[in-house]
Every structure is written in C-alpha cells, then in structure tokens.
Image 1 (cartoon, rainbow, N blue to C red):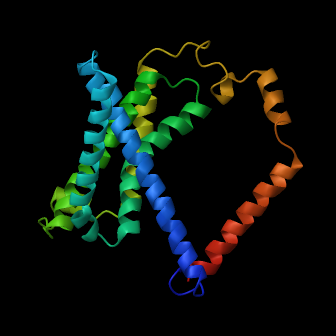
Image 2 (image 1 turned 30 degrees about the vertical axis):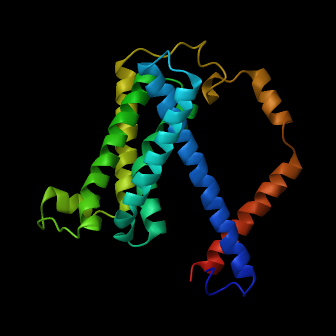
Length: 231
C-alpha cells in the first residue's frame, strides 16, 4: 500500500514514521527484557549486587537480546515476509494470554491455578509450533509427508492459533472447576460478576454520547479502509 498507493513525499513521511515506531518498539522491548532479567532473575541470585553491577548486567542483557535478534534474521527471511512471520508468532503466543484476560473478566469462577495452567499449556503449544517451523524456514528442511510434524507445520497459523485458544479455554475451565473457587473479596470489582452498583454508576458517568460517536467514527474509518485496501 505504501509503495503503490501513496504519492511521493507522503510515502517518505510514512516510512519515516514506521521506522520511528519500530525503533521505539524495539527500544521498549530491549529495555523491558533487560529489566526483567536483571531485577527478577539476576538480583534473585545475587541479592547484594550493587547498582553499578545491576546496570552493567542490564547492558549485557540488552546486548545479548540484540545479538539474538540479529541471529534470528535468517529465520524471518525464510518466512513469507516480516509481517507474516510476526503475525504467526503472535498467533502462537497470544491466545493463552487473551484467554486468561477475556474469560477472567467475564467469568468469576475461574481462579489463579486455571490461569497458570492455561498459560503454560498454551505457551507450550505455541513454542512447539515455533520449534517445528524454525528448521523449515532456516534450513529449508522438509518433514516426511503425513507425519505429525508435517501436519502441524502445514496447518495455517490462524487455524493453529484457534486450536491453541480452544485448548487454553478448556484447560482453564477444567482446572478452575477442579480446584477451589477464588475468594469473592479478592476479586471484588475485577470481573463483571463482582462489580458493585456504585462501580457501575461510576463507570457509566465516565463517558457520554461524544465518546460513543467518536468510537463509531473510528470503527467506520477502519471498516472503510479495510474495504478500500483489501484489493
């Protein structure tokens, strides 16, 4: 779309914006990853580490993440493009997270153990698919036709993401109902089933018809853009 639809000049501005957004996202990812490793793991092993040592460990973690990202470029090149690869990776890892947040908001009976099991099983299925896909993208390896790995590798990533979602839902519900229900006091106001009347009134008072109209305009613009650019 950027290459064939936008005029010259605007095309450069859009590309510059995309690159700036990409750099910002990467900086956030590297910073979050290094902080997670340094504060949650390294500091746990070395609780008496000085601030200077923690800063240096954060820099080492960031450098390591950059190197891993560079080494992973051949895998991305073996896919059908960067966008397709990013969508597939998100499709493998996002379903269990969506399951936990979505069902957790609407279903008050679900508990922490069910959430953890759903996340664990969902992530395991996603990593399993990534492990199967990587050799085919990196080395061009082909699995024996009809084998389990061949079947998994040839499932369209959106269908596989749907499978992960369904499995995560089943695991979350089953484990939650096999274990004790969460304490009502701890989840008060966190789900639709535990929202009080006062909280409902506060929520209703926080928006008006202007917000609804603005949301409708945004949705219409998104649908119009999709219909125009879908080809």
